[in-house]
Image (cartoon, rainbow, N blue to C red):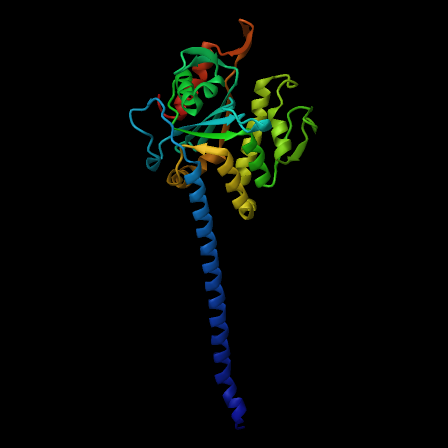
Amino acid sequence: MSQSRSEMRNPRKRPKKNKKGLKIFLIIVLALFIALGLFIWKIYSDVAGTTDKIYKDVETEEVRESSVDINKKEPFSILLLGVDTGDLGRTEQGRSDTMMVLTVNPNTDTTTIVSIPRDTRTEIVGHGTTDKINHAYAFGGTSMSVNTVQSMLDIPIDHYVEVNMQGLQDVVNAVGGVQVTSPLTFSSEGYNFTEGVTASLDGKAALAYSRMRYDDPTGDNGRQERQRQVIQATVEKVASLSTISNYQDILGSLENNMQTSLEFDDMVKLFNNYRSAAGNIQQEQLAATGTTIDGIYYGVVSDEEMNRVSDLLKEQLELN
């Protein structure tokens, strides 16, 4: 049976339609890739701009013979300072309400966080006095804090990150809040927390949760444990894809409340070379005994405890 002209033309039309559909699909895919590329470039550009604004180098005593080489994946340390400037409307220099030493070792994929009690009695390097360690910031800012911690723990501090207390509230809000499980039952600044219960906290609640210490049976040690909880929960939230839509709010909160000696290129290298260590965090506490000297309360650290923590950090930094 012979085919009609229309039947003979059909086989020729179908390939044309398929080719046209394929072209449209490829154009859509290309447009999506271009849009994604522009979005990634925008994020990259915004992050670079923010890190340029928060970067601030400070003069500190050199402890290492040569600077740590991030390209070679050498272990390094960071001093985290949470200062009370900006909290409750303060505008003066303030003191370091929180002090933590972080060591990051990519060879063991381990990050160690050591909390230093704010009342720890030690020599304030550069001030010629023995005082509470949190006064180092009031006397000489970040530089004196770094030098004092280096001297007390006998380790190098390679970088610092400083955040004011208002910044903690803003960052937590920017990431959409954090979840923490309270180790005890207490009330603070109108918020109630229950032992063993996981609660979702906005910035103001997180600040109240991390700041209370007088009603904690373990005093400043308990407060530092809760501060580490909030910091770790915030870092994990920032690192998750769920915050990508809020990245500009996060950058804005950091820009207004944070300073660091890490430059943008450093942060990129840290992400590429050290991110596996961020998944294995070990928390330690420098234990101090409360003592009153000349009518002033101090936390006194024994030689054995100081040596224990110093040796631990040296091991993490591969200095032994």
